[in-house]
Image 1 (cartoon, rainbow, N blue to C red):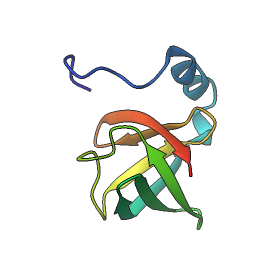
Image 2: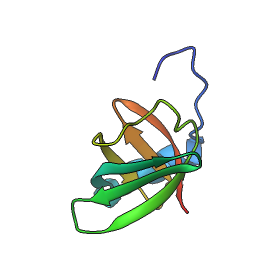
Image 3: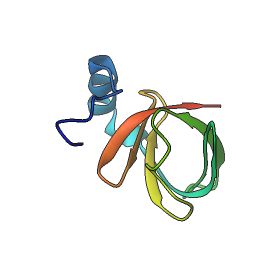
Image 4: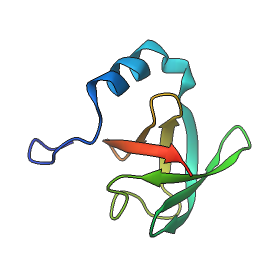
Length: 85
């Protein structure tokens, strides 16, 4: 994340993600929406996420990782908050 872009990730979210690295789920964006995105996870699940700053962050076909407990979405080296819709 660039230094000029304010982070939407809270320190407690970073701690949670670091404490439970196995909770990350890898997936592919299958749909983008005004309020977020839909991700098909490699474990077979499909989930709609409400993501902060989602506009321009991802496109259909992009690989992403989501940490459901910490509510973080990682895409293209950037991270933002993302909650299950």
